[in-house]
Length: 143
Image 1 (cartoon, helix red, strand yellow):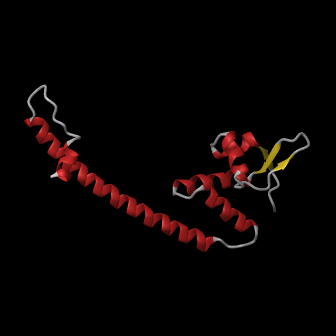
Image 2 (cartoon, helix red, strand yellow; image 1 turned 60 degrees about the vertical axis):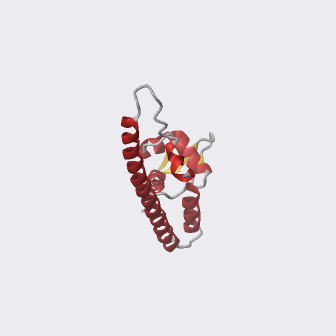
Image 3 (cartoon, helix red, strand yellow; image 1 turned 180 degrees about the vertical axis):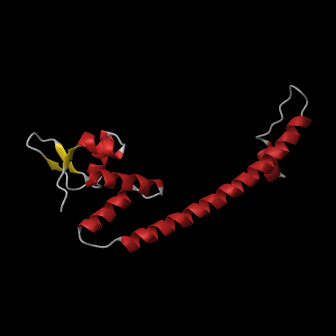
């Protein structure tokens, strides 16, 4: 049996724990389909829109953009199967994340070294004098 329940925008927002503005924005971005207007011109959403919003929220938390998701949902609506594309996109996001983590780890190691040097430089600086900690970042390059 097909669920034909239609809900007001505020009801969908409440079910999905988002604001009404978020629901409107997702509709404008093409993420929510099957929205109809009643005789008074008010939006009515299928109850499945709340689940779609939850999918959108979780997918964006994983790094998918709204535009990417809109394309996936458009492909689905056109009868295509975008699952391979979604999987490949997730793999690319993971690779980019791993690269970013490696860069952050390298930055962390550099910062730990810099702080150790600055601690020593600061302790060796006479009270009331400038330690010129930031300037020490370029002294090595100029030597």
